[in-house]
Length: 542
Image (cartoon, rainbow, N blue to C red; front, side, top):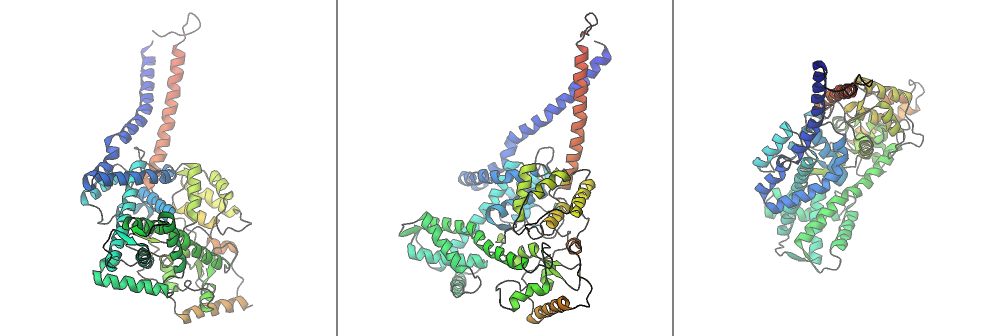
């Protein structure tokens, strides 16, 4: 065989080996002790029993996480970096429990600046915290490791529930590990009342905590704080019947299990109220399907006592929370989907999480992730899937306009041919397709945290109502803005990606794969030609 042909064969073989060795190395790393070192560290810090608990939770979480994980950009190890890990865990807890975990939300920052480590704060030992931080920064997390991190966060919430129950037991001077059924219900109702209001009673002294808890329960029974208190107590009774139907004495560990199950179900109860608010706001839209309500119409139910407990937030608070469309300064509008997700519509707010209205757009994103299993997709595929999807509040005549088709194609062109699923521009497009359901994604820095909701003064509410009525009945006013003007008034071209580095790596990886495939094809052709000998009309290897 000529020397130059041998060189070609050797080079092609080298590249084929590179193709094989890359994935094999990644598999070895994932299956190596390094892949399970987080669990080993948990065992060293907390003991084998806690390691088993964390691992057991992680197995359950892994199943829920897998679709989002598959659709996120990854590094060469097949792992997600900190911003993507934060995004995945945020989605996980919203889907499973309706929790808006503190430290996993965006907080108005750039999408790629957030790390899930913020959710831990100072609540885990320094040694474990440093290991998690180092793994995120230097290696990223594979699906197992991400599930373990989720399990650690979930266990942190469990520890909070246990501490709150112990505080409640001490406040009621209950010292036994078994409690009379009637007393157990009293304990659980007091716990539940303080849980819903969101007070951290363990921060107080024991005597003061007892007073706070008893007062909160009494006020709830009188109709203060939470209009669905009777339904919450009924939910509590239902769960007790499931776990201890005939028991005259209930163990405190069973009480804790009951309370945790109630906490996991109460977001469904709360979402009934959210659905009611959504329907009321949709009835007041300025244009059918716009997902926006003029401020005057937003305040009208409150001023007419048609709806209680909502629609009272001040104009400034709405703006700072990202729920106000101010493209028309004379006729500002509340964005329905953003309003429902505001802090003022959450309950059970603690240092760990809050139970808020369910983001109905989460189901849409999960469906897209399951069907695509990729960080990006062509505009045509996304149009096909979005056209076939219905979300709550979607008008019966729902269709994707030519303007929206063009804008999606422009997003794909901006990114070199495909649309990243987990980015601001696609989220903005989805909002305009489903404005009643999917929140508008503001640019980084647009949303400002406010400690407490600020209510509008009655005269300010009436001012907006009067202005709306005046404009609606006036014949001298300029014609109302078109539907597209209302819908696209907030559109901006600024992109924010959950994982910009991952998308760059994906593009480079795609190019490398193409080159290697071409070289493999050349190698195959060379080998084929080298098998023929001149004597028989073929070539023969030396």
